[in-house]
Image (cartoon, rainbow, N blue to C red; front, side, top):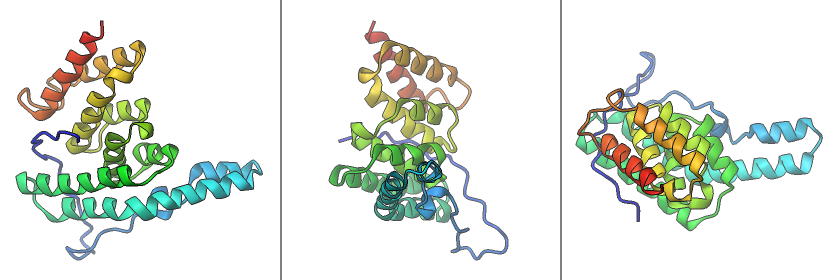
Length: 210
């Protein structure tokens, strides 16, 4: 069970086009949303049709299972004002993503692709799935999410994932992680925030490896 701190969700509300009704959302046209896989396209371009079919099937499996969860995350974030109630609602969606990852098997490359290339909703869903299943994790993608998060909520969950990963990192990776979170000090969050506490936990765990 992943322990979730009471992170105050400070992400800015989703901006809507003036041409959309309040309950409407812009259509999602990311690769994840269409079920298309750039890896499949590359395999097809190289003439490896069998691999392209397999990669497309894996992308569709992830989209069919996790897509509704990602959509619910976007709906909650876009329809509720920032605050404790929205944070609780978002964490309930995140818990569903963790449960899904525990109940079903997914291709790690597709989950990593969601974190690297997906929408805000896909990225946070991928982080939650990685929190639940170690075999889905990817250090470089997690580090990038800490360095360049789309939202404070995403950075929080990337750091939460990093806490889980520290003991499995090699020394070089652990050093890079520590350097990355140390640079966040005073730049992205308050000293008393949950992300600040996660930063200190990561640094403590890294230093404890020495």
